[in-house]
Length: 140
Ligand SMILES: N[C@@H](CCC(=O)N[C@@H](CS)C(=O)NCC(=O)O)C(=O)O
Image 1 (cartoon, rainbow, N blue to C red):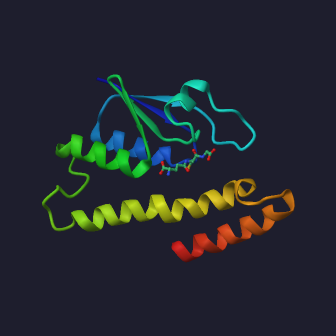
Image 2 (cartoon, rainbow, N blue to C red; image 1 turned 135 degrees about the vertical axis):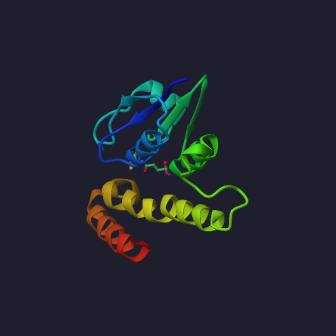
Image 3 (cartoon, protein in one colour; image 1 turned 30 degrees about the vertical axis):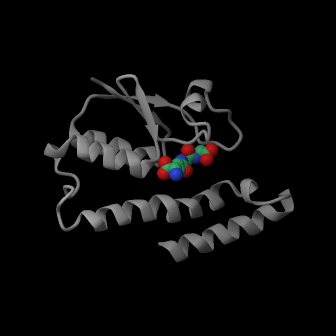
């Protein structure tokens, strides 16, 4: 079985790629874009209508959301020893950290990278971006 990963350089998909490398699982990259002004391939939008990466495919299934993919792969490949097991004491901290990054820190990145999504008019975009950068400092 070969995993497939919708992937863009400089994106959160790089984290999932690192996990696949660490596991030693065969995988193929499906290169796409995170650029504001470029369309996403229809096949990618069919799997994740948000147009975000990463999206992981295996067998005839697909999933998105970094934190979910991370837990899924770590649990599926326990021999790689990348995460505390379900009954291990550090499991809570592992889940907390993952979800914090993907729900809080990553939202601040969205404000910084795509201010048009958070402003009613183009005039509001610099303010949204400034808020995003402040939010990044706060959450980090
Ligand atoms: N909550 C999602 C967010 C993923 C996300 O923001 N991905 C960015 C790259 S780091 C992306 O695809 N951006 C393209 C866009 O927002 O259009 C996750 O954790 O997977």
